[in-house]
Length: 337
Image (tube, rainbow, N blue to C red; front, side, top):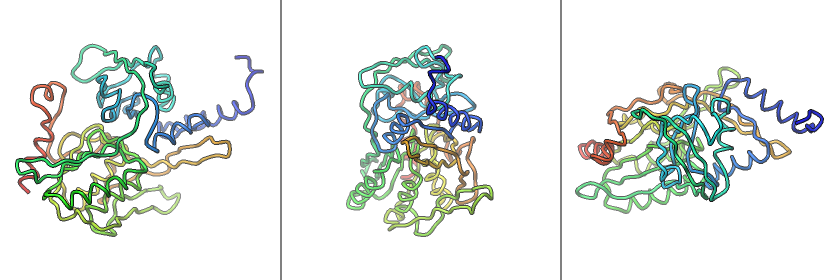
């Protein structure tokens, strides 16, 4: 493109993008108006694409988790997969949000991701047909030999997840359930406030769920439980894995710190930073990291994640041969409580 063809707006957008990239933080980004619209669709619960949360881990583009029943999951994409190429584009030259934009696309179109995966010697090419993605929030069912364990799979902390959780909590209270398994595996997070709302079903009011540390730039912010604590009397265990990130880690960390709830599965993703979204007058947005967050006991998980109390590895081979051994272990542990 000839420099004379570049508009003033494009120059400003390019400068904004460059300033935020210079911070070296993959979670601080500038969204031009079309990208800002896509981001709002994400947190609102619907979009068109492959249905997978991705992030930067050890400076490489990594799948945090495919969403339940999404094209990504159905095509075989797994949490922990490292994305080398999107079609023919090398991801080492892409920002996180740049990668998101080219992975996204209209329903019915195809994108090919070239990935590497632990336990696989060869690179894998995964062809995914994009679709309309309705992000599910959760499901629940009774498990156990006496059908007395409420198994809750919480997939995402979207803006509607608090209301959905309230509805299923009421159903559980009216059911034969005596114990609960909360499954946060492959839950990439979402709204922090939703994690705080859900924590209030399990913890007494006015307990710290998470602390935002602003490094002295402003007073630290404490998020506390509120609500009925109606599920606090149920023995509880929590399932986690490498796809459990952000708000999932906040909820899991609060439950363990306050009630010594056992975490079962594998080490979580380790996203311990807080972003603030600012909408600009031209409908562009800036999302910038403003703080680190800590569990109620003052633990930072940024880059390291939460280690489970009961380690149960899950691989494709294990799942194919033995089924979901992590759920089986969760049932065993919570049944003994």
